[in-house]
Length: 105
Image (cartoon, rainbow, N blue to C red; front, side):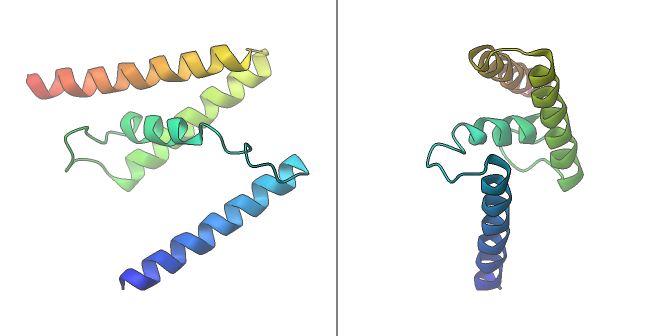
């Protein structure tokens, strides 16, 4: 079962890489830089906890949709890439702070 999970993730990663490379019309080593920030922020926005044990697939999908709308909206508005990273970092900090503060209560 573990082997099948790894094979599934490898196939999905390959498909995502091919789609992204075809979208850019090139294969650059720096093409996927800072995608981990979006993935972590999507998980925390979706309800995953920093201490673990909490979170759902639906929540992660909702978080990914929120991050996608945020990325697309900032690109449409013409926000610079440095400000986009700053805003996404602030969104991540706010979602983690909300998680930590809600756990204290």
